[in-house]
Amino acid sequence: MKNVEIAMEGTILTIKVDVSKEFGPSASGKTTIIVSTEGNVTIPGREEKVGLNVYRKK
Image (cartoon, rainbow, N blue to C red):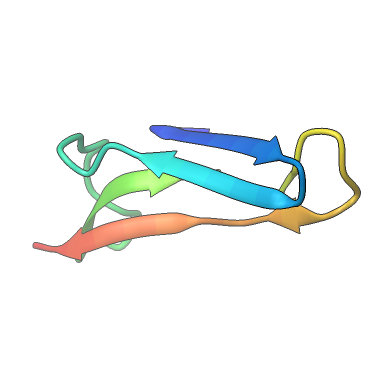
C-alpha cells in the first residue's frame, strides 16, 4: 500500500491518507497517483476487503 493507513477500532474502519504526497503518473499518464492500496487488501482482523485509489488530473 502506498500512503495509506487502515485501522479498525471496534466496528469503525479508519483510513488515513496524506494528500500532500504524490507517487508519480498513472499507467495512462492522465492522472497523478496520491494513494493506492495496489488492489484489494484485507482489513486487519476482519474478512472484509478494501480497495482504494486517490488521484488528481494532471
